[in-house]
Length: 130
Image: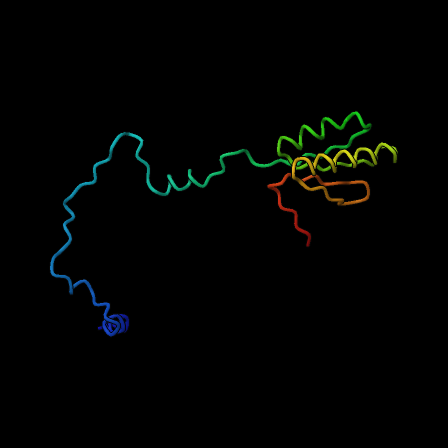
């Protein structure tokens, strides 16, 4: 008797010889329909993302009239990196104010990631700093 069997016997986890009757393997499993799939394939479909992967859009507005483009991408659920380096200080300030209002109104977040570069993240996107 091997060591594992001795331990199993000691713990009361006797082997297969302890059972009175054998299991009947003669029953065949009936498959209903042609769309039968193994469990692994069903699980893979269940956990596969139902939506397209999220996108990060990099935008460099030149004037304040480019604000609707930023709003369109953000409202579609895309993360937007907005670089306002090409704008005058007054227009850049207006654009950042617009972006902050957009993020607040859509329950997202706005973060400054560099000098005159901002990240607008939708509510479902988590931002962490290292």
